[in-house]
Length: 490
Length: 124
Image (cartoon, rainbow over the protein chains, first blue to last red):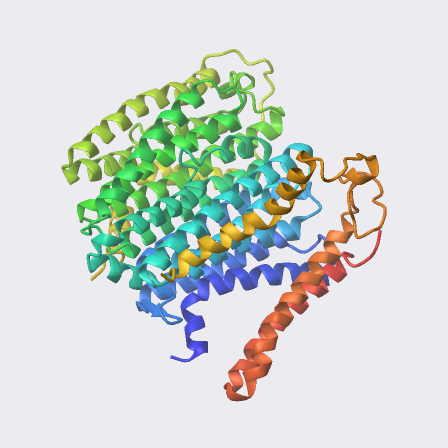
């Protein structure tokens, strides 16, 4: 295979990254800030999605670039997820961007983030994974600090510094994995681990613990969560909505790839070790995230802590992968897909409401159902889905991921699920308290309002997705299962 | 016994720690036994900056423009680092290597053109 044919395999990523250049080029050629950037961005996303669909249909899966890149269903599943999230954020933020004098840069950075994350999930080599992950992170630091107001700049700096520490830990872990196994390709590491080198248990454990620290930062798992509440509160909310779903999905995707495929599958001498590690991280994240969320009064901080708790829920799927079945990985993927729709819906509703009432305080949301029935209803639907109440997508996702852990039949996994169920009850308190504030309490201001048209489009789309997946989950579940099957080592 | 590779690293670590510590220790011992005189002077405690008298505090702020130029410089510095090995062996490479280098330079040139257009190269 020559060099040029291989580029075909990373087509979606190349399209997205090249598209970022086109957006900037349009800004250079046309009068400043006047080009239809949002349309251009959506066009680039559509092209990348088309390419990914082409891959999915023709079945040109397999390694390229000497095995550093794989184009499998697992990668394509996440590429579709990233493209959908980026498109939704692009549409939702059109109004917000008008106030910003950096619109071309904003859309270009979004595309770079989507492109590098697409490359990340195709990565099958530690070096490529690190480069793609850090490209994503670099873009996100800039995006968080984009408005350069006090809070935004502070959030950006905090995110940058904690991210740099996480990247350092991760590359140290990569060094341990490489030093122990003598390979940077995940296949090479996998065959070393599968050969049963028990004497290498200590350096391997050091390696994957450090790597988990780096990935845990992206997923906002306790104890690597410190940045989340501050960044959620300080950063520009449309960007945070992107961050909250895309960064988390990217982190979990690459954790699945590295731990499930890279560390030699679920039947090795260390698979129980890392599964237990994720179990501990899951419990810590759920407990801390939910307890801290109980006392929040700022909605953005509440969503920040809720995202930590949800990361704990998703990590149950990682803990359950040592069972050998694809239930764990596909549970993670299905949960992430529903989480993207649910969390984006909740965030967009919060953006639309807070742009209007000028406050993120929960008390100011009082009586919202009478002021803007549509926004309040959609926000409530998403809160129900985050809690895990039928008939929403979040309910199915939680049942599925809990089931994957129970099916494994190990005692500690059943304890883990019990903790998760108790936590779900705790989380219902703060999610539904917000719903109660919106319905029962008296509004301070009776003036009604509606979101803008572009916002309505994405809100309705998110709400329909949440309900549709809740009622008809089978297609998405089977897509996740088929994608998870390609993760397994043949 | 000749130590292995990591053993040598430990020896190097010991030498590296002893190298700055030893003169300080000797100086202190000489002072302790009244061999060297002690004559404190504020000038002795000033920051040594290659003989030039230090001006202002070390927390002074720089114009952010310096960083833009520094960033621009680093990008092209790295470009040269990548192009050197390429230039040395490019006669042995296929013709596609030329195109690949051209793509690499093209991306950087696009970045420069963008920075130029946005006025990042002007001193304001």
